[in-house]
Length: 78
Image (cartoon, rainbow, N blue to C red; front, side):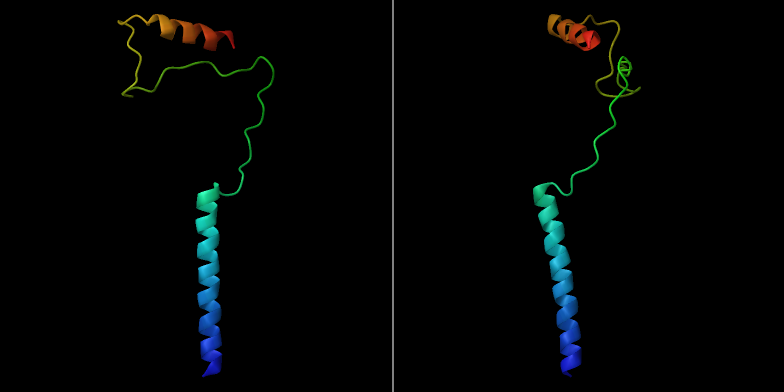
């Protein structure tokens, strides 16, 4: 009977330990991921608008506000 209790206790503690590790990873942000590889110089991706039917889709019939124009110039300058 003691073998059954020891086996049950071992499985219970293993599951508890794994659960606590998972909970800790959620609260601390998990393991650090791998950063994206750097782009070659002068090879920045082209700016594109949101995809079709996106709620923030650009409308060519409405001019950009002064703030939006300044942001666009800043993004295009690199």
